[in-house]
Image (cartoon, rainbow, N blue to C red):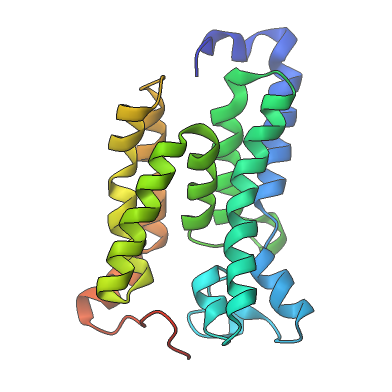
Length: 208
């Protein structure tokens, strides 16, 4: 985020647009859909909650497939940032992460109906602020273990992300960007929040 004004200079505009488009398309890869179809399980969107993320893939009973979905969805965010870093464009790293996040939430391949962003947010954190990523994992695992609700674990862990980024990151302004991403994550979890409130949310590992 340093050198923000350089992002709109004529010399960097083409690179910026390429980073935004490339990161969005990378984030748009629906690994949950791809992996379940490749495994002969049909379309994951017709199973359980209909979501394309790892938690719903787990409802197929295929733990390895769910883990692969989790890792690959996370790596979309990490890879987008690392590619930009290898290009020698540090000012574009946060933008690459944001665009990959948008790609996962609103993938062009699925008519802009994508996942909820938990794994991809974690992947972005891992690349930009690894202590915050570790904190997120600890909070998620603790909440998931105690409650058995993946959605509740994600919601509570995500609330701490902007605070952890502000504390651990050299560039505290990134915390405000992560606050925006967390707001989007909560928006995508609106149905889960309603089910949690009603006591009808499915627990981790439950089928259907």
